[in-house]
Length: 147
Image (cartoon, rainbow, N blue to C red):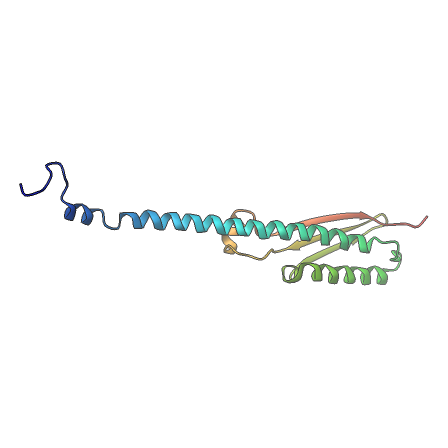
């Protein structure tokens, strides 16, 4: 025996047999971390979009239900709807560019349905599978009357 310990492993054999084993685990860990990070970013973008859509949608319906609009005149109601949609687009920016509006004005209230696709960080198919693909809200505001 020339300087080796009886229980010591041969260092040249042990390093070759374990070479690269940490690479697979590290790659899987990084992939899982990045996936969760992307999901968190998409969730934050969706929550911001939902909050902005709620505020802008309610404001839009309120503008059309205002006492300043003559609800007996279809032209005045249509002009108020166009102005409300333009304001909605300005508030949401690029997120509201493709927003879809469905207006119903009856004798008592203004009904507005807004559908918006939030900006996507995740691929659309993955976002759709976890329910982060579309914001669909309906607002009902009573028509203001001057007494």
